[in-house]
Image 1 (cartoon, rainbow, N blue to C red):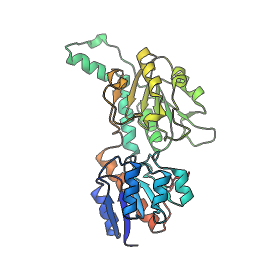
Image 2 (cartoon, rainbow, N blue to C red; image 1 turned 45 degrees about the horizontal axis):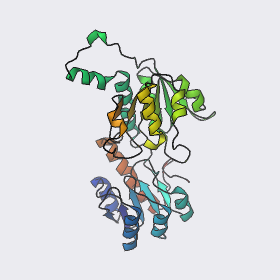
Image 3 (cartoon, rainbow, N blue to C red; image 1 turned 90 degrees about the vertical axis):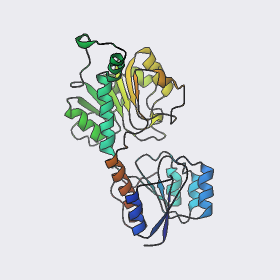
Image 4 (cartoon, one colour; image 1 turned 30 degrees about the horizontal axis):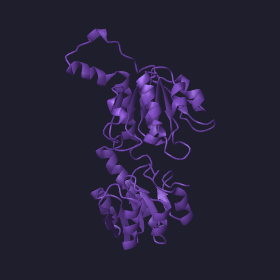
Length: 321
C-alpha cells in the first residue's frame, strides 16, 4: 500500500498519527479552516481526489460532497466519535466506509461529565461567586449529597458506560435507559424515558445525534424529571430543546445544568444560557485531554490504514447507515 492521499478537514492533526500515515506511504493535505463549507469541500475535492478523509470537527460531508469524492474515496475516518455531519445513507450507497475512534476518549468525557455532576450537586460555582463577593455562608449552607442520588444514563455506549461506572463508584444509584434484553453491566434498567425520568435526581446524556435523538429532551421530558433535578450533557447540544431547557432553569423546575455542547457553537454573544447562573458551561472540551487526543488520533490513523489495506476494522469502529 503506497501513494495514497489523505485529506484532513482541519489545518492540523496529531504529528504522531500523521507520521504513521506517512510511514505507510500516505500523503496528507489539510484544509485551512476548521469549519469548511460544503462548497469549500467540493472545490478541494475537484482539485485532487483523495483515498481517505480524516474528519476533524463537523465538516459537512453531505451526499454532494461524498459523490464528488467518488470513485476514489474509500473511507471517512472521524477523529472522534460524532458523525452527525456525515450523510451515512449516502456513504453506504456509494460504498464509502465511515469509521469512528470508538471508546478512545470515553474516559476523558466520563470524567468531565462526573465533574459537572459534582459541581452542580455541591453548587460550587455559586459558592465561588459568593466568596469572591465577600460572602461566607459557612455552616449556614446545606448542600446536596451526590452519594445516594439517583443518576440516569441515556446513551449507553463506551462513554455512557464509563460515566455510569464512575458515578456508581462515588456512591450514586445508577439507572440506565436500555431496552429489555440489552446488556447493562448489572446496572438497573428502565426501558423508556417515561419510566426513567421521574426517578432521577440527575440526568446525564451520552447518545449520538441522529433523526431519532434530535430534540430528545424537550419540555415534556423536562417536566417528567423530579422538581429540582439536574441535567448534564456532554454529547451533542441538539439532543436538548434549548428554549425548553432555558425555561425550565428560569422557572426553577430544573435546578441546574452542566453543558459541554450546544445547538450553536460557539455560543453567540447574548445567548440566554450565558445569563443563567444555574448553568455550568464548557466549550465542548469534555473529550479534549492530552491522553485522549493522542489515543483518538492514533485509532483514527489505524482505521484509515487498516481499511485501505483491506483489513477489517475493530468491532464498533465501522458505522452502518
